[in-house]
Image (cartoon, rainbow over all chains, first blue to last red):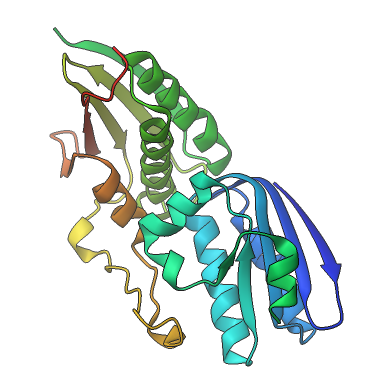
Length: 110
Length: 147
C-alpha cells in the first residue's frame, strides 16, 4: 500500500494505492490521524488505485469519518473500483460515506 | 469424491495475503467466477485476521493450518488454530445507522464475521478433540461456475 497526501485550501486529498488489510491498515489510520491532529478535518480519499480492502481498512476509514464529523468536517470517498464498492456495500457503508465518481467533484464538494 | 490439500502458515498478518491467494487460486481452479473468488478471498482474510487478533491475541503466537477440500458441488475451507476458544455469538453485530448523520451510532466491530457469514454459504466454529479451534467455511458451486 502507498499513501500520498496533497493539501488544498479547504480540503486534504489522500490517495491510496495497493492492498489495504490487517497488515497495514494502521498506516492509513496514522495518515488520517496526522491530518486531524493538525486540525484538517475535510478529507477526500481517492481509492481508484486500491484493488483490495478488508474490514481492517474499513475500520480506518470509519474511525477517520467519525473524527472528522465530530469536528464538523467530513471524509468523502472518490473513485472506488467495482471491487471496493462491493466491499463498502457488503458492509452497508455505501450509505454512510459520501462517494463520488471522480476526485475533482469530491474536492469541489467541500 | 473429495480432494484435499493441507497447508500450514505462521500466524502473522504478512502471511495472510499469500494464504488467501492460495485459496483464491484453488477457487479459480474449481471454477468460481472472479467476483466469487474475490469474496472468498475476503472471507478467508477476515477469518485469518480474527485468528491472529483474537484467538492468538498477537502475531507469531501460533500457526494457522489450512485444509482445502473439494467435493462435486462445494469448496470447503477448514482453518485450525491452537489459540483461545472463540465464541462467534459473543462478537458484536455491526450497527450501520440508516441516517449517515448519526455517526455516533455507527459500530463496525464484528464486520469480519459479518463478511464471512454473508459471503460463505455455511460457516461453523467448533473446538476439536485436541482442543484446537476449527472453522469450517463452505461455498457451493453455482451454475455460474465455469466448469
